[in-house]
Amino acid sequence: MRKVLMIMALLSIAAFASDPRLIVLGDDARLLINDYLEMWAYPGVIGDYEFVTGGSKTAGDDTDGWFGIVDEFDGNTYGLTINHNDYSHEVLFSPGGWGAILSLDFDKWAPTDTTTAKDMAIGLAWGTDVPFLADYSDLAFAVGYDKFSLDNDEVESSETDIMLGASLRGHGNDFFNLFPIITVGMNMNTADTTDINLQITDFYLDFGAGHNKKVADKTNLVFGVFTGLQSTSFGGDYEDVDSQMWISIPEITGGVEQEIGKWLILRAGAVSKTQYFSTGDFNQFTNSYETNFGVGLHWDNFMMDATITEGFLHDGPYMVGGVGNGFMGSLAATYNF
Image (tube, rainbow, N blue to C red; front, side, top):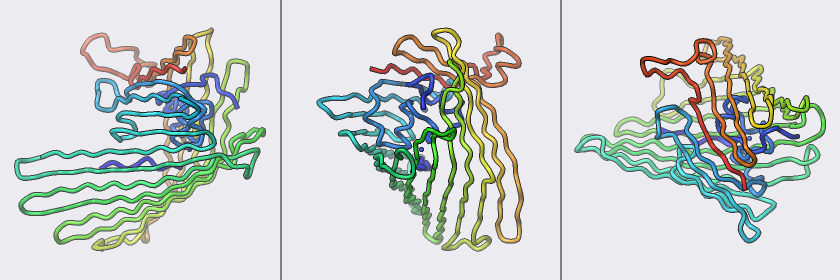
């Protein structure tokens, strides 16, 4: 079952980019500025963008592609997306000064002749800027509701998620020009069948700082450093475990963009996580590291972005056999008005 993206969210080379750029530069929209993807972390910036875009995250799979358009009309900014963030539709609106995103989805299907499944989700995110904690700060709030149900002749089951979140991002002129970045969220999950009731409550909090600035005439650096806490508690008919806890100490994410000539941008990024995990008498430390590569092609107001995996860089393309190894595995095209 889908999980609603929790809203946690001075000059970059590519002012209008896309999901592939976000993936390479750390996959955290809170670190983006002058990039339309930041509006899903902080809807207060919706009025800053006018664009049309479309893309796919996985080569060969057209089910994850999405399309979106945002434009200004008569002093207000309106937008619509299709199949974005696992929602069938999103409606975006900003009259100036604040912005909001309403997300909707409904699916009904029959896995078998005697079984009916339904999944309904709705989300609302709102944001504005406030003169607080820095030169100014982006402030955002979000709520979400998602219910999945399965009915047949023998058993009825349902799963419900209720999500709440808020995020604050300060803007300044120091090296960490995005500071502070504070995000808090909660997800309450309830699963019911005829005889069993399971309850899970997740609480999440993180605090960090980000850098998104040019370090040379054609070189842009984006990175963030965060420490965070996630606590999970179990209720209802859970018997083996009462709670779990994860602490990030720290999480470092980001990347670099290098402009080559007038139309080509090369990108490389990484995510490094050190986490402490505890449940009952058991505890452990884990480390993980991930690298990403990508490319951007731009002509005037048109931008095409793509990711490139390490397999392609090390081994080159597969010429025989029809096996893909990640060249332009994630692809998107954007035109800004």
